[in-house]
Length: 101
Image (cartoon, rainbow, N blue to C red):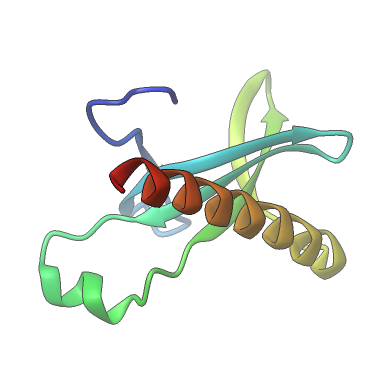
């Protein structure tokens, strides 16, 4: 994930077999597990504008010996993770703004 030259992308396949591409924004590895903050990618700029920067949080689980991503179903855990991710996003934004000055 430390690729300074481009986005880290991941493709997920939903229950209907449709592929969706996401940019990996960040990763948390703590006592609760491993979690990714993912931002959907879009082919058309209008769809990207309409998304309002909504990101999704997925948990890395192991199923049949393979790592897979699953939705976080525990609302309390989801709120906790969102707070951590958003704090980290703010720190990153502040660092980038300071570098540009």
